[in-house]
Length: 159
Image 1 (tube, rainbow, N blue to C red):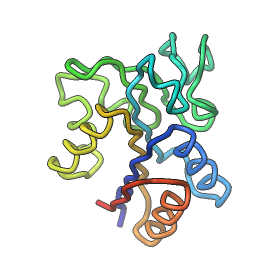
Image 2 (cartoon, rainbow, N blue to C red; image 1 turned 90 degrees about the horizontal axis):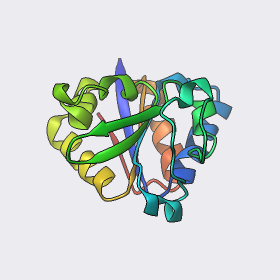
Image 3 (cartoon, one colour; image 1 turned 90 degrees about the vertical axis):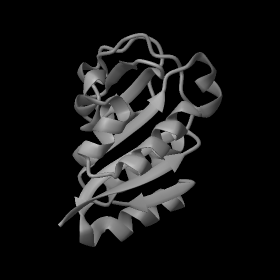
């Protein structure tokens, strides 16, 4: 059975480090999604302002979120009304593309995360946190949760 593991990080580079460790352990990075608010002041959290929405093709000018664009598929910027520009990498980027379908909350619900928790994760993003999700088989969930915690995740949950 498939589950979604979610971790909330203070810094993008912590999420990147966790994604790299997951890849090194032979787990599928295609199943990782990362959401972070794109603001000028995010430089202090390890993220530099991005000026192009086509990270998946490598056509990024300006800064990139560490090496995540090369590690994850479907990376890009998405405008969410009331929230601003969100850098969304991985499968979630396609799910939140249409704000009319629910934006971040709708995308997280589509990934199997209950609406109440999805609202909390949106609040985390609004506050400058990084939300990391990964779809995995249930028997791999504990390993993934341990990796997230070892790399600085503040909160780790399984849905």
